[in-house]
Every structure is written in structure tokens, then in C-alpha cells.
Image (cartoon, rainbow, N blue to C red; front, top):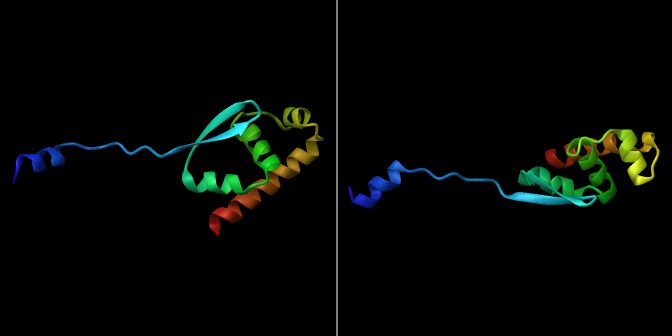
Length: 92
């Protein structure tokens, strides 16, 4: 066994997933996970923004509605519809 082979056996390398960034309001939100990132990109921009505001910026529906000039029930419907669509995309 050559010396280089021993070194390869004694070391390990960390593999980090690529970080994707989504623009939400005035912020860049980092997101890891290629499959879910691709699925999120396939959502209409308005619904994707609402998902990020709700689940990544931890904003309540009322605050999202006020920020986007919508009624709260519309935000609630968009969230539910977006989650169904994400599930469908990820299973497909």
C-alpha cells in the first residue's frame, strides 16, 4: 500500500448541500434542499412569497395579509393550496 492510499483512508470530507436563496420582501432567505427548492420555484411567486413569510419568517396570516394587501382568508387559502401543490410536485 502506498503512502497516499493510507492518507485517503484516514481522512474524511464534509459534503454540504448547495444553499439556494429566495428573495422575500427585502430579504434573501437561504434554503437547503434541491428537491424542495425546485418545487418552491414552481409555485407562483405570490404563493411562494406567502409560504416563505408564514413558515420561514414566522409571520402570522394577519400580518402577511396586511403586508400584501390581501384579506386574511385569501392568505389562508393560498397557504393550504400551495402546500397541496408542493406535495403534488414532490411526489411527481
